[in-house]
Picture: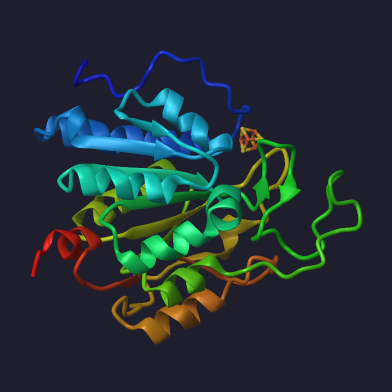
Length: 266
Ligand code: SF4
């Protein structure tokens, strides 16, 4: 294995302008930096589910598994139990994490398994032509749902906070934000849930996100305060086209990881 080469030679088949390119570049830069600092490629493992996001697995020349739809968390859990020192990164789309795999996403947060979980949230099942996912806004119309979405979206940030996640963050799909949050999440001992707001230029356009973002750090948000985190999370309900959208770390606390509890024989 060439320790310096993080990208494969595979031809990238994402649509031109797809925000997955930003996530890939952020992850690549993060890994290259870690390797420059002395880490080896075999210190890491990546897991991807099914969806447009999952092609990242083909483009990163890293050890790992392209697993079943919705099964990224249990695959990461297996890796961590087999080798607790491995740095594991899971990738899912909103369909993968919030529909097919929701029960795993909730359980893994409760268990506090020490891996980092990145959700490429473009608010649709993009790979299969834009069907609504659990976070698609009310009224969204597409050829697959001509009368529009009639059920309100769920709020995954609040769901994960309620489930007991020890690190909950949201960023936009932009290279430097991806790289920075990966650094922060890697310092965290425990499960890190990172939602990446990521427009799909084909099936779910940018809803003026950039004008609506604000940085939680700049408003001195207390990331150890669960109630404050939940209130911030409520500000964007995934349906609104005008509300502010907080970015950054909503919540971060420390508690024993599942691996520590599992390996403790007492
Ligand atoms: Fe990206 Fe959307 Fe194209 Fe999928 S369909 S590759 S998410 S732009």
